[in-house]
Length: 226
Image (tube, rainbow, N blue to C red; front, top):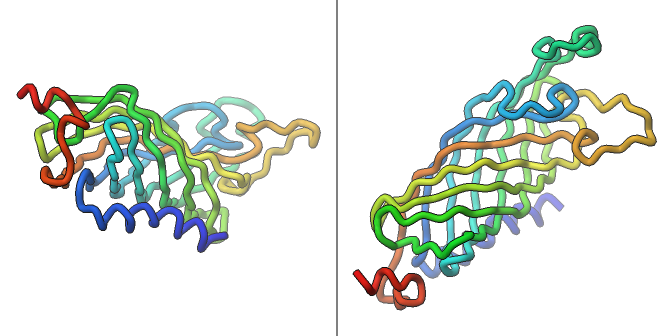
């Protein structure tokens, strides 16, 4: 299973690299945080650093395939929450996560990766990935994750772009914080019975495009008008 996921994550990168057109290469910086038995709902709780890189293959103005590798820090402490149960439980953890994902992006409006400066799009994304987890409460392990999120991107020129994204990783594992949900066995919550983590931040991308390979009219009529 692990080998299959790794192959799936990077197969799109290998295929796209042969074309060497309509490609964005980027770096990412931002923050990461955890959701689970300690922090059940507070967004951006104990935000820590995260960084990484991404690769986009722009199929057309609406659809993009993206591969990414992100590294982030996760931590939580029961003492940060003002309720008697968590204060007495006094659980805490800290650690890191390295994930590799393959995601599909859908732009809500047509977006030309080589369009004019200021051209932008909002998008949603989802896919599959694998995470390498190493925390103070857990032996290093690999786990399957389902990544999804929303974002926006804008052209800074014909070669550079910038974007912002808020993404989540749904895990199928409840031991990230070293503590399983102590509720009645009949109660099984999709949200609270498995741990999550989130990564949000800004990306800066460099665009690789060969103008001889495609007709710009297919991508964006505005390019011809210019």
